[in-house]
Length: 192
Image (cartoon, rainbow, N blue to C red):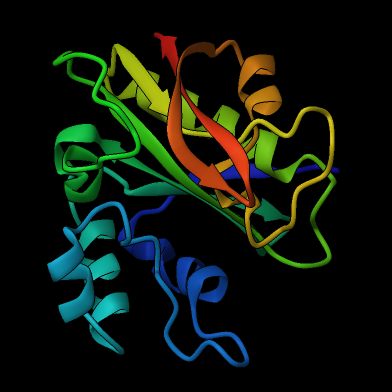
């Protein structure tokens, strides 16, 4: 599939909203704020406040993620940012802090139904690496699931898989006590 990946800037916010916005039965969703906010903040930022918060992030100096396009259709999203801006990661009891090195964390993938299992997530990961490199980032960190070669539910695959990250050059650093669908998650890193 021919996929183009672009930073999630303010002029592309409508495309971010098309991917992260309300789905049937899920009127407001997470909007990829779960890791960016503390638990208390996440619970306070509800409803229409969530897209406003993400819109503000898109208006900032650095994109909060990248968007995958097939033609002009937005088909996927990958969220990332400085680990220091990820409130829940900083206080996590299940995802260990390896050290104090400055880094960006890749925390979420969303691929729209109809475009899954076609390489969109891998293209998003490559786009995230390119954006981080261009932004002067020295270290990327992620927390994907180990699938042991099996399939994982789309609703649980939002963290990515260890095999996808390994194909992109990431190294396993430490298994976490966090689980996704009963499967172990790993801290993985890529030196840029």
